[in-house]
Image (cartoon, rainbow, N blue to C red):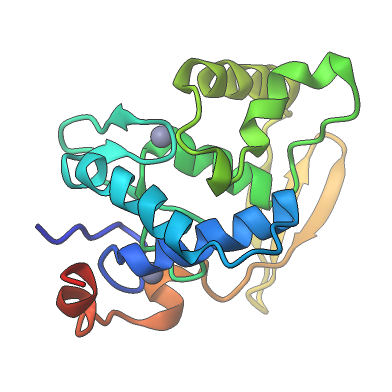
Length: 186
Ligand SMILES: [Zn+2]
Ligand SMILES: [Zn+2]
């Protein structure tokens, strides 16, 4: 089965998950050893779940018709994760989740890296609920001027909005599944 995420530059490639797990271990734990075999074991254990439509980040079955999000842990965004995890990664990558002390404990699980997968789904949901409670903002209005510049108008003023040209994934890299079959059969 070929799994295509909404945003991936190619179908899910186990090799991408192997690479990001190793990177995650080096970053989190300063692992100086060659962890390639461990990474392959980690990914091999997750593949049956992914093939059965489960989110590898929180080990929860995707809902019927749920289109997987492309995990932002890789630039190609080919690792299919659930909508909740996709939203969590989006706010984490945008630096919107700040943990300063014990009062932020409920938010901490949101910062989990690939080395922590699978994470506890109920902690993730609780963290997202806490985030939403804290970040309810006044509604803004989006306007565009004659030069196509975007502005957001809120109760507190007017701000200029700069958008990246594309969010990564296939919009940035196009779509290429030529190597997919060979990689999955290794
Ligand atoms: Zn998930
Ligand atoms: Zn990939």
